[in-house]
Amino acid sequence: MPRDQNQSFAGGVKDELVRLPLGKSCCQLSEIGALTRTSGRLHFRSGGSLTVTYRTEHTGTARRLFRLLKTRLQVSPVLHYTQSPRLGGRRTWVLSLNESDSRTLLTALHMAETDDDGRMTIRRTVPRHPLTRQCCRRAFFRAAFLGAGTMSNPEKSYHLEWRAEDDRLAETLRRLLEKAEMPATVYERKGQSVVCLKRAEHVSDMLALMGAGGSVLKMENIRVSRQTRLRASRAANCDEHNSERMLDAAQKQARACRDISLRVGLFTLPPALRETARARMENPDLSLAELGAMMDPPVSKSAVNHRLRRLTEIAEHLE
Ligand SMILES: [Zn+2]
Image 1 (cartoon, rainbow, N blue to C red):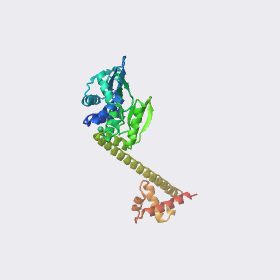
Image 2 (image 1 turned 90 degrees about the vertical axis):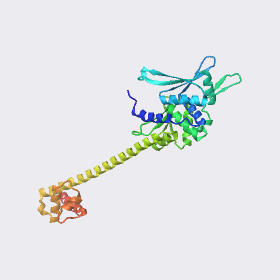
Image 3 (image 1 turned 30 degrees about the vertical axis):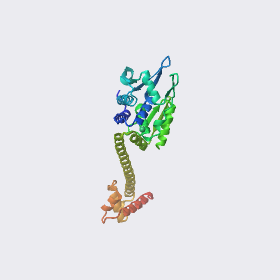
Image 4 (image 1 turned 135 degrees about the horizontal axis):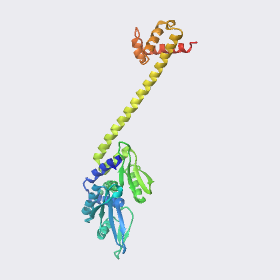
């Protein structure tokens, strides 16, 4: 089954993000930190050893992470993929670090400390230093989106979210978003915290903040044409509504004139009313102004309106 439409816009955003330059050394570490929090797993082995693996379905993300780890930490992950027949043969990329590289990584991220005996203890906190600078916060949003983010197709709705498996990551994202003046909604879905932005301008701002300028343009174009379409259909509905009301009124007037004609005869009416009644009976779909123009001599819309009101009253009082 092809992926749904929602996936394709988000996929385009990810494709754009992974092509960005790796950036400053501080931001590289911030990206590695976010990807570790969202796509990384710690594996504890007997004897106290520990290794890290990453899993992602997005090829560009796997490649970017590989380059980040090599460039920033000089570690060499092993990259391979698994294919699950259960999920329609979807490919998942796996990056594995050996024990010593895992130690280098976790120490750099301040997620682990090695004591005097060479034993490592894990701290499950988001490293503090990458989040104090604006440049690193942008890198963090970006990599967290690559690791655990998605967004709806703006043709349908405005929604950008990060799934956070642990609550501390959700809290970190929420706090960072608040700092960036983008209030987020946090809720639970299938036991996971979801942090999301739901307003078009916030979604657009976030894309820009992460560095997805091309996607911002695409989204803004969609937004403009969506608004234009909405306005156009509202205007059309409005016109239709008015002309329906107009036609209703005209039908009622024509019926009144016919009543007079059948029951007492149009000749009982003064000449001006007689002429108007005839014109209305013959032209039940013309506007007041158009009827006025047919008169000899032509009369104003309000004069026609006045005459038709008189005719309706006369019909109502027919016995
Ligand atoms: Zn930075």
